[in-house]
Length: 143
Picture 1 (spheres, rainbow, N blue to C red):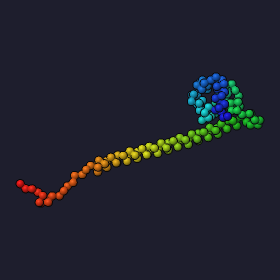
Picture 2: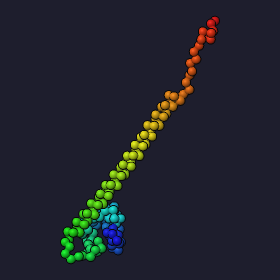
Picture 3: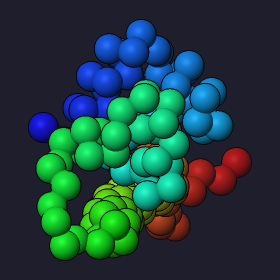
């Protein structure tokens, strides 16, 4: 299980809603939701606050067994790497969405221009033209 799954299970076991946990942590509810859906992870300081509010050790929250000889800063480094990976993924997703929107807007503009040019050409060339028939001297009637 990932951090979000543990967080959700521990929050529910404590009888807290996302909103209640968010208030206790001084964050918005959407932040708790993102953590629980594994879209982002809290930093090391926030992990300590979460563990305190849920009254569990950080190791239980992370579902890891404390290993001997591993410095406590190692956890912060791991979380920092995970946060950076999520940030890169989010930037890529936003870039892809922007490119797709740009292409769609460009296509819509081209279609609009094409439609305008088509209707202008219809107005100019689609009308029946009056034919001018040259008259000869014999066609003219004099009175």
